[in-house]
Length: 348
Image (cartoon, one colour):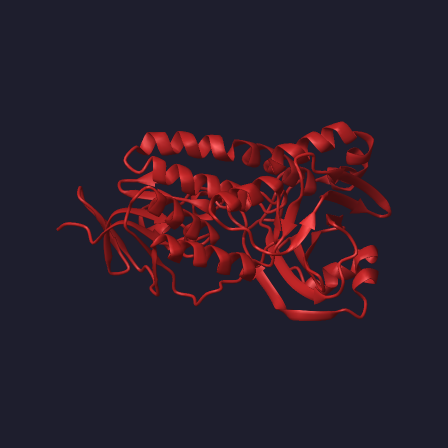
């Protein structure tokens, strides 16, 4: 049976829409399968690093938000700032980014249809999922990817035991917006006793606060352990509920299975600590389309695109889960050249 379309993208989040745009630019017919109505929200930090913003512009998207000049690590009165050398990034509310990408994908000629994948079958000529038969399937369905499980590429978790020193345990993300004027044009990363809080200005009267911490973390309880941030937000009106995501660690045995390619969070994820998820996901989307008929080529491109993220983020999360945690910000202050080099490497 011949395919209905060239490419089926499962998951219509930012990375899935980026993959759809890339496929259309390659002259391929594309259907995006997404069960949620647009715009799709997600618990995330909402700060686009300079390289991510450049990648979004390459896709034809330049969403409104607040310029971000750099990163500020903060803990117990200690501050380590680094300003981006390549120009500003941007704080963009996730729903704003998603709406802009969906508009660009539809304008490029992609079809976005409601639907959910419950099974995946494939043969030598095509792959079928969600009632659509395609020549290729790009699985962009996130941390809890159904496609990844269906095609047998999910590596079993190592259990939910608490972290040992230097060994990261399961971590989760929480996010809430506050109606308050931004007080900085830096992404502030507050290192609390158990969680990190990312503060990102996303509009003139709105900031997002994303907390990364252990299972069962309560947003308000963790916020209260960070006095500087709690004082800033005292009396600020929340804009919407607390949203959650996780567990953040996802491992895969491979990124390809027959005519299926895993892209973005579905392909493997370390942690949100360094804010690289979208930049890496956009790079994977481009590589997946280039290497549709070359599985080894996509595996190599995936490793290149994710190398810095996997190594640097794993090291930083390992420190965060160990007795070294309290030394991260002091070390950044004492070694500004090293700190700046790491930020620049992740920001590019």
